[in-house]
Length: 144
Image (cartoon, rainbow, N blue to C red; front, side, top):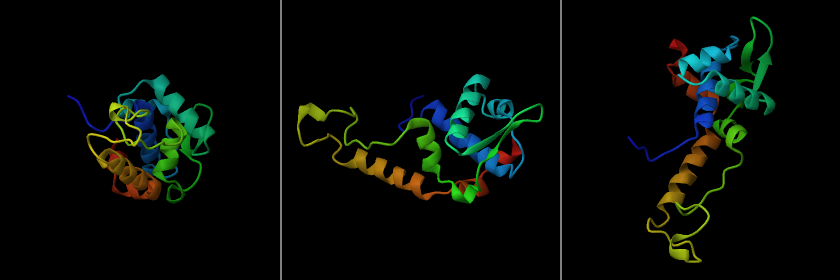
């Protein structure tokens, strides 16, 4: 079944992992636990966690009891930072074709008007304004 809204698997894993780690509130969470919880490849989960660590969002703990914790308080992390750590800076586009306008028209006329761009702007605003702590507080991921 198709969906209209698509995130890469890496971005989805990153957002879910960060919420899970925030919910665990200081507990060290292993990449293998997260990959099992999200039914994802362990190697892919590890790579996502490495990128989040390099971006300063996670702290890695080595050894048998190792895993990941948040590098700073969840109240100081916005969802956009997580997304950007995986996907890079967001570039909004007025067209589904991304780098070209419908019919080659120079004014970016689209069969959907400005609706696509408007949805992207709204969601980007949500990501930039929403703190990880807010999402974690309403999440049921702690039960995993």
